Length: 220
Image (cartoon, rainbow, N blue to C red; front, side, top):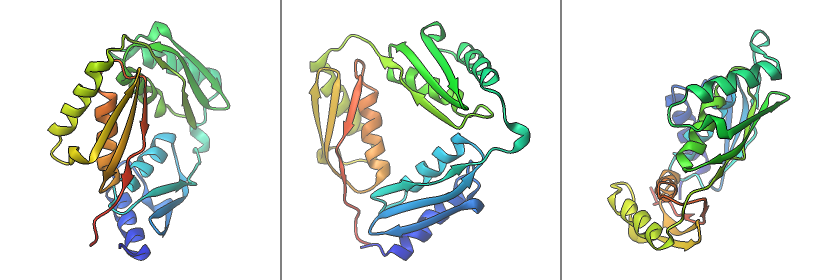
């Protein structure tokens, strides 16, 4: 079993390695596979990047996210300015149905509403506004509405899992309920769990993914 001390150091090293994160202001503690991130960053995007970096580390079973966002005073923007820039960037983003996406900004937090046809459009819309100056959070309420072909969804997901060189597809189970995909089984690390979830979202017609995969890291 990986010791708390080693897990903490591995997470710190990964944060240091991540170019989009200023690790100097982030604290890390670890206990029985649960990692707590504290401190502060300058943007919402940097906060998410820090969490993703920690999840990549072998032995991390759960993350307690306590990082604060502290915006430099000269970069704060009013809600109406953020909203205008969010609408503009959605229009410029190739492949997004900007006319079907609603934007609301309250206290620097952006809420996206409306309908898109694919999960990647939902993710791209959030990514487009996440790094705008002044944004402290994004509530992505976009709905994925597309025809569902349940019999084909499972096959497409399982084929995608088999193609992955980093994942043992035989250890992951897939169940389909309408447009919802339920993943189960066991993997060795967070990044393998993420790969399985990405494969599930890549299938056409998927509107929801429930990730129930357990993480059982190998002993070092």
